[in-house]
Image 1 (cartoon, helix red, strand yellow):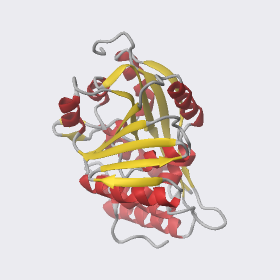
Image 2: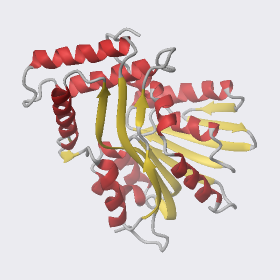
Image 3: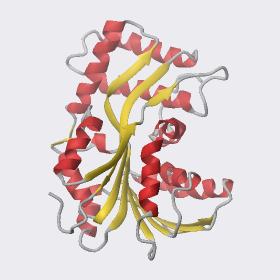
Length: 317
């Protein structure tokens, strides 16, 4: 496809679904499925997804048959447009996959394959949501997909765990971990320099006066989880690998790649250490052209982790 002249974040989230499907570490997913089967069977399963985007994880959960009983699913995202898209997208997905759905306000009831699920969507800041719900509600499982590497993890984890029931599960996926690879090389030394500079922009990101990123979030998450008393049940690599076959890039993955290159462009343009702007713009132009020719291979290293919070009650450390 030709380089887009403007970009939609909702379309990017939709386009990366197939990339995520390939990337997710299946042994960790299977460990989650096994742990859920061992959970309390006498009451509905409760799931909280933070940074839920447009609902692609919920679609995956249903398509991959993760659940085996009635489920109450709470999906939050701070971007209102994402929630609006999810409320349109999920019923359309259900119709296409033989699920029955009914929508009332921001709640969707789904039934099919012997399963009933009630999904409530809300556009809200994570910390405001936790402050509101803590002490009133708790969940059996929290999911954060491609989310934690955008946060101050040591601050965020205790907040998340405060709304998990004792012994609850945390499934944290697509946590970026320090490798961004574009092939073929344009200029190996310059490519490597831009990769490092891009990772620095993650490490230097400040949101609301606080650090909000980590270019090695995946590896650091192990110790962050142990620091709050969580037990790590499973983990593994969940690398994005996007490339064109004989028929070109699958699905809408060319758009996904154009969006990634544009993200590089926006992150580095104006950076004081970038150097020659014209040289960088030529690099960006060539990367987009490689996508148009079906040549670009993109790899990003990430890690999935499944953990269990302490079961003895009380606050995590």
